[in-house]
Each structure stands twice: as structure tokens, then as C-alpha cells.
Image (cartoon, rainbow, N blue to C red; front, side):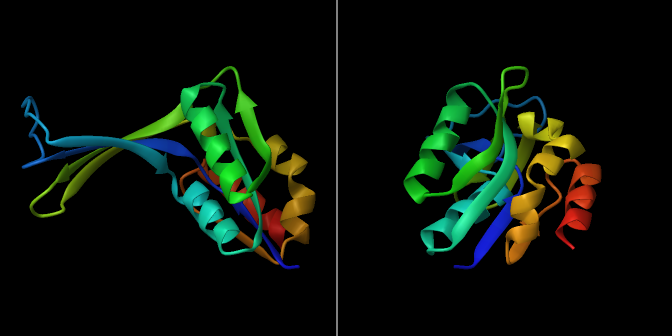
Amino acid sequence: MSSISILGIYVADLVFFGKKIPIEGETILGNNFVIGPGGKGSNQAVAAAKAGVKTYFISKIGDDQFGEMATKIYDEAKVDYSNVIISREHSTGAAAIMVNEESGANAINVFPGAAAAITNADIDKAENIIKDSKIFLTQLEAPKETVLYAIKKST
């Protein structure tokens, strides 16, 4: 069976919907609010696993509520997250997303949290799954130096 390994980040998306996006210093009343899974790499891992591909996700999350949300999602989608480090030193990342309901325009502030602390040593621990996977996928949301290091390991 083919497999894919994905290096990326998980963040909890906190999405606020309103008639407009506030400008600096402005407070507006919103119309709705949802919390859901975010982070390009995490979302790609969940999608690949749901499509039936053996999927390994490589990242770092915090030992907190948002981290628990991530592992629950991975369990449900059957993502192998044995190379997702659960950190007691860092919190799981979050993204604040403000959406203009009328136009669909958005403004996003992403805090990568624990995923910003992933290191080359963490990649070394995942080297076998990176090399053994048919596809290695990453983005530039994790630290650039670590992403480049992982890409070199994949070749």
C-alpha cells in the first residue's frame, strides 16, 4: 500500500463571522463563531487518510485542549500521528479568522504555537517514514530551516 508522510502544522481555527472585518481599534458585534481544525499540513493529512491513503503526520502540538482536539480528529480519520510530538512546554497553535459574511473576504492571524518549535532532531526521529513513503508533502508553515532539512531527508 502506498503511503504519504506530511510535515506541517496543526492550529485550532477560531472563525468569527460578521457584516464586516473591523479596522484597527474598532469593535464590532459578530453574527457567528466556530472552532475547527486548521493548519494546511494537518488538513492535508486528514484529507489523505479519509481518501484511504496510509498517512503519517509529522508535527508538534501542545498538551492542551486544542492538542486533544487534534488527536481526536487524527484518530477518527485514521492518521498515524506517532510522529506528532506532544509538548508540555508549548501550547497548540491557533488562528483567529475574521470573515466578512457578505463578500467572503477574511483577515487571519496565525500563531503556530508548538509547531514553530519543531526541530531537525524531531525530523531525524521521523526519517524512516519520510524515506519509506511514496510521497512526502510539506508547506512553509513550519520553520523554514526544518522544512528544508526534511526535504533533503526525503530525497
